[in-house]
Length: 367
Image (tube, rainbow, N blue to C red; front, top):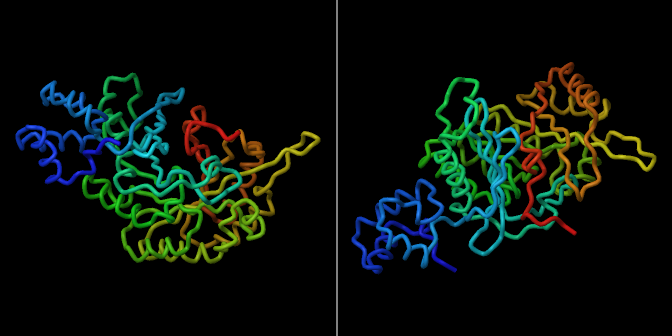
């Protein structure tokens, strides 16, 4: 396996290049390119051609390599399939929005949570990602933005045509971030320090690892927290989210609202709306009946939170269906009637499998 120069310290980079017969100043040039997210050495135009060829032969730039790139039909979402040094694969998603450029990153290769509606967990957990492997996903997106200035994309509604910076991060890709808490925290601190992305523009999404939520509270940075809830009762949630057998709803919400109170942040509640198709072809609502809307309202009434309603996005290996638009709006109306701040998420990248719940371990489907 080739050494990854992005992982080298400055001293190690100087030593590596001087052993190749290069002057020390080359290390600074290479470092500048690495920090920009250069995917290969041929991109480093101020290096001699022979040095670029030699580096391509003996090393690689980042700890991730783009092996596939998919663009949504509206041109606003790009999904990257990335290969790690040990040949494991992850995905990240770049979303060009009205408020800036948001990147959804993975924190693990695979996922151990076993949620019944999600593609990410189908092949299980392979391993945690390092700080550099998570951070490199941001660099991949940044490189795409800065080398795409002349693409035929609409100017954002706020009139800003400067589309070349990552402005927001959501740790909502493959894996459970709070099973990899220390590396996720290290990544967030680096993104804040090195890229200047504000704490309040970074969101961690968890299915409810209570010790990890407590760790984030103690860490003390005012990031955003999202809880993947998806059911208002322990019985139903345990059926679709096995983690609920360990951490019950009340325990998860208590920890999450403690976090939001400590940082004066509104808690985001993620709620995927699920239905099932009966043998006679009729559709039956699973977690989004009016009764469950009332139960969810009881849990959240008077709390500083916002419920993000997400109609289920299709995953071939799962047996759910998305509820009708009428059912979705009826569920939302009940929450609003009970004073719960609620919105229906506009999903991005459904046509390229990059919407909520669609990210996979790799590009091969489970047989």
